[in-house]
Amino acid sequence: MIASTPAPPYYAVIFTSLRTEGDNGYEAMSEKMVELAKQQPGYLGYESGRSETGITVSYWQSLEAIKNWKLNLDHLQAQKNGCEQWYSHYKVRVCRVERDYGFEV
Amino acid sequence: MIASTPAPPYYAVIFTSLRTEGDNGYEAMSEKMVELAKQQPGYLGYESGRSETGITVSYWQSLEAIKNWKLNLDHLQAQKNGCEQWYSHYKVRVCRVERDYGFEV
Image (cartoon, rainbow over all chains, first blue to last red; front, top):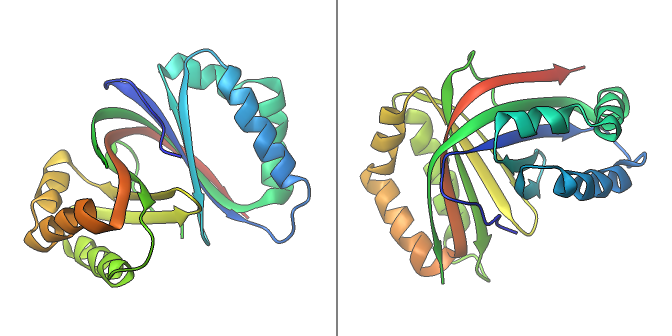
């Protein structure tokens, strides 16, 4: 759903990807990574949508929290498999959220 | 697809939304907004994916370019209709992209 994040500044990691054909363990890994991310210090939230392109945005308290998540051992294994079999193309963008606003009925 | 963006820093607008039921002119508006955004000064690229949650990320050269796009007259009308009929919930986050990296087979 839409992540409930604190007042800026905070940080976002935009992960955009194109998948290869077939599952090859992707869905199970994806769910596991979300569960692991939620346990990381500084984790704030998560949003995801996929059409032809997939976009996952995770939100974090600090650049340090993002770095620690990047170096998590299970996550490193997922990153390795991602390059080898799940994605034909991906891009990661690390951002500082400067301001936000929204609307809810 | 995945936007081809220049070396950071540049800016990203993360637009996350939950849709209401039915089209109500949404698809036509959505395509028109992408075409209009592409014509705006400072536009760098665009990525989109929708599952239950929809995420659209647009990339821009500067905060000034983002502000000008926000105030575009046709875009203002779309924002108004968005609140009134297309979205039950949305959130906009304006970010500075600090670094990026990727992978392509």
